[in-house]
Image (cartoon, rainbow, N blue to C red):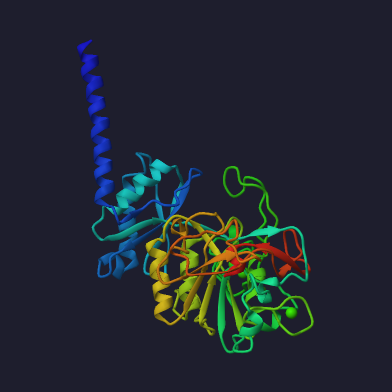
Length: 408
Ligand SMILES: [Ca+2]
Ligand SMILES: [Ca+2]
Ligand SMILES: [Ca+2]
């Protein structure tokens, strides 16, 4: 009897001690450990940054050894191996576990990684999604956002001053499709999607930024995810930036004198932070291991993508590098009708976060808001270029979309 009580008490004490230990570990690693983006569907991709000047930073071989040491203790008591995927352009390591970890296992592994004094930070390699809500009805004549007095941006007046001639805009999105109202304004880009299954082009990174379609079946992109047709989001955003204008055809672009560098980062089920941040650095003219130098560095980077949670170190470092090269980074605020401070990369410093307004000049019902918004622009019922394919690309077309993507 007393034995049982003692044992129970001892177990309780152990449990309490473990909780205290975990809590103190977590607080000890506060600022180093960012668990934002952990999913209840399982987690296998992380980003680990070793401090500048550390042995692990000097030599990737040392980083691999350190990752193995941290993984040796397992995740939540169960065996796990950590594979080194590659070193990112920001100097952090992209790593992948050999199995999907539940939330508790992933947190335990991340704490083991953060316990290394040479580790600067540990993050989830968060998945980002295109920011938009497509509208089923197509009105070819609807480009009210360019000229109407109430809700328009007075583009017709701005075009007398500039139409973007000589500027390059990198659109980091789902890639590009052939379109006669776009083609002459498109420069060679790059496909940064490293996961062949998400890319759907049969390989990892390559020089062909063609959008292969981002359709998905129900449940394919996480528990409860619904089936969806391909969005052609990149083609739509690109048309808003630089559709061929004054050609008696289709739509006009806001900066139709500019050229677009299509940078593919979003595929089936979205895109990885590790790919997007490499793409940010490359687009601004920086170098990325394994990727040819960018012959067309962009003055402006447009990202109409995002995910939940405040800005991560990896995003902030990549954005700071691009801005340091003189590139302006424009980000859609997000379509969650919530404060933008909880969305990445819109909440990052050094970006222009764009909210969406309606035809009457009001905030679009879906648009994120808050003190981190820099500008607002029309984003409701915006007509632009797309493809007509429901899965893979077929013929060119036009459609209306709603979203801060359309505004930015
Ligand atoms: Ca590829
Ligand atoms: Ca490709
Ligand atoms: Ca046109």
